[in-house]
Image (tube, rainbow over all chains, first blue to last red):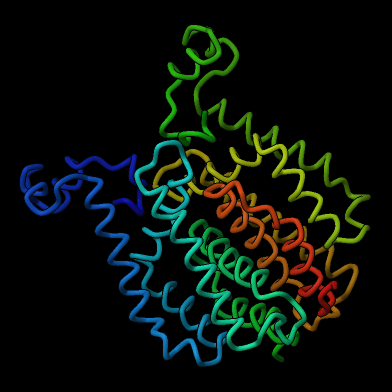
Length: 174
Length: 174
């Protein structure tokens, strides 16, 4: 329901009705709507850590990220919740604002660190690691935004692979 | 107020109060909250067309887009409204959903057309024009999302310039 209508557009009563519980029944499991939000975001982060384990970061990034995007497109549930809440979080006083501020900073730092360990201060493409860290994260978010509005767009895994190969290595796959 | 709290989080009464009018006073100028939304989106589109006139598209794209991003960062008003509403529009039954679906499609097509006219079916980088069209639009959206959560991020114009030079020409500026 958060994915469909956002956090602010979803009431605890509506959630209770959808799952066939009373409002008190939902509050038995989650102290508040905000705690339900936090739990969902932590679940998404935990599943991401499992999917993108440290070992996999040693592999071929363009192929790896293309796989991640293809997976999200086929299993949109938590990916859509994440995007919708991330976008909504920029509005005033949103309870997930600090979560997403920290999330973006830590993901940029993680990408930067892995790239720097592998390639040093300059990537083979000539770009700086911090440039690619911010741009890669931005591209994944932006493609998701386009896909949320048009689920027929099918080429995002290939776009991710080709663009990332270009940004890292300076060469386009044929 | 749409930028601060989203369309759904903003009532006509709150808008009226902020501008020192009654609700009826606001409705004298705009038939409905939805019409106010439409008017704002059209204003943003119109200003964009003026800023990015057809003549400017003939110039150096990496520099041009870096300027556009720098301009948006210094004059965030309408750029932030646009981003917040674009993100909110993916939720169910949102009145701007069709607007943004059409908007993304037409911007991708415009970029694709200009790139194809200038470079043909393959860019100097080796990437396909449709790949760069989707990726460029995505990167601009995603960087904006990062900046909305952390207004201290100051390097987005340079990131835009460097990444776009890479995607178009296959070479990183030094």
